[in-house]
Length: 163
Image (tube, rainbow, N blue to C red):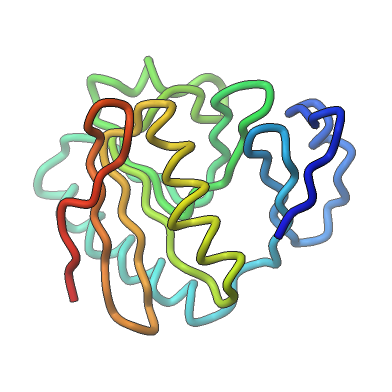
């Protein structure tokens, strides 16, 4: 579990983090560090990208982006596995090279470890709900399940559990 650091860290502080293949994310000013995803995680990501990209090739309703940063505030910056944004919302959601507004869909693939699971299922779900992400999928490659959450009254509520 991440330790609470005072004063809170900001997005500007992330520039001081080393370029060492770890992922550095801020949630509520608290630093979360995780290792680069392993092969099982990346295979699930690859398969999702292919499936969704094939759909979007026939139905060009938006854009799918893997592994780009999302900066929601000075204290909240994360790196979702996959993000989808409808065409008509792109300019409202993207600034420069980062997502700065709420995407239509965020997908996270669970990595091994209780802390990673808690972060994706609870902490990131609360963060994405707070900033208005429309839908959130949590993929468990080992269990071969997908938890689907939709925004309802500023909270991402479970609407389906698929296997």
